[in-house]
Every structure is written in C-alpha cells, then in structure tokens.
Image (cartoon, rainbow, N blue to C red; front, side):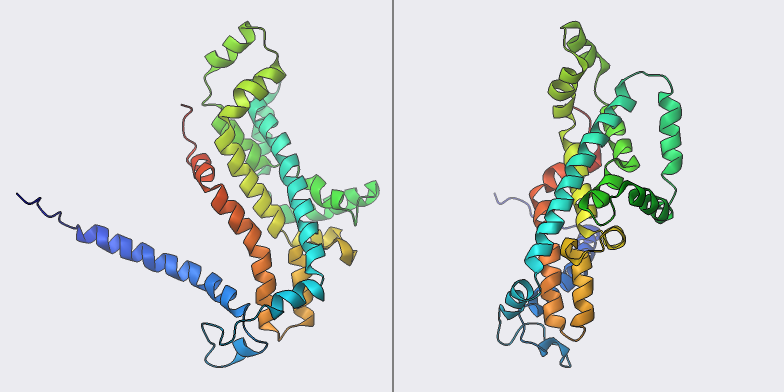
Length: 277
C-alpha cells in the first residue's frame, strides 16, 4: 500500500511565502552591497544600476587598506569593542546575579531606580559624561570610549531575570558544602548563565562595534578613530566613489555578521530566556 499523500495547508504555504519574501527584501541590500564592492570605479553609478559586476575586481579593498588606512581603524574598533564587551559582561553579570539572588539592604529600591533610569535617552547623558571625562583627562582616549559603557541597565536586567530561574536550593546546597560566594558564582551560577552571557556578549559587541556618536565626540585624534567614524570621514572625501564606500561597509559589517552566525544558537536561547535544565 502506498502511503497517503500529506495535504499541504494553504495557510502554512502562504505564511512561508510571506516569510521568504520578507527575508529576500531584508537580505537583498546586503547582497547588492557585496556585489558593488567588487565593481569597477563608477560602474554602480550607471543607469539602470547593475546587479552583478561586469569585471569583478579587488581594487576597492586594496585601496581601502593600502591608501585609506582601514586596517588601523579595524584594529581600533576590535580593541574598543572587545574591551567594552568583556568589561560590560563582568559588571552586568555580577550585578544581575546580586540583584536576583543576594540579599542586601536597599536591593529592591536600587533596582527600581535603575529601571526608572532605563527610560532616559542616552543622548541626554552625553554632555555630562563628556565633561566628567574631560575633568578626568580621558578625552581622546580609548578608556573614555569604554568607561561609560561598562555597566548597562538593560544587561543587568536581563541577567537578573535569567538568574531568578536558578533554584535557590542549589545555591544553598553549595553554601552548606562550604563554598564561598565567589566559588558559587564562578562554578555553579556562571555555567547556568551561559545563554544570557552569550546574548549580552553579542549585544555588547554589536553595539560598541557599530557605535558612531560617542567615539566621534570623545576621540579627536584621527589615529584613534573606529571603523564607523573613519568610514563617515572617508565618505566625505569620496562622496562619488560608491564602490569604495560599499567595500568599507562590507569590512564593517562582516565581523559582526560572522559573530552573530557563530553564536546564533546560544543567542536565540538567551533571548527565549529558557528555564534551567
């Protein structure tokens, strides 16, 4: 006997087609950006604009690194993003765990104050932060870029919500066995927080890598500029050179895209805020 054919649900087919169409429109600009980066100078400005390069070339990337010094700006962004990600993870994870599981005076009131401050736009604090950093002598330094982002309210909130699902009995059992608070945190709690830690790492790295406004304000020395700031400066000098600009955009986007794809499994698990197994 032949197995009965499964009926395809028209609604499911429609949803899949709609999702495929939305995915196409989302990824099409990125694919065209990549295609333009391999075109000859001026080729993308023709009408109608070509979808694929007639004669692919790496000249735009060679010019980007050999003449525009993009390699230095890439390293600058890597240093700033890595330092800010590691620093913010350390503060956010420890603070989130403390708000979730440790009992201390003023814990709830402090957390409520943090939640209230979450609604304040970051741009409002830029001027006071700049003046504070100027008094500390940290303007035009990478420390001035990294320091204000070491503790994030949203990151603390995420860790707190995730850490609340850790059974109190597990922590108490470790205390009964004689483990100190630091040992409990690193050997018991931290492995359970892996999904949310990876999610925060992705958020932190993406945010610092793509940040334009704050490095532009703090860093006055062109040698210290990060990729977004350097790319904006380059666009003013090569406003008609679309191919070179697209090559710079590819260099800027590629690292964070690779990071996201590599950590996608843990990233999605952290967003789902699943229970501890």
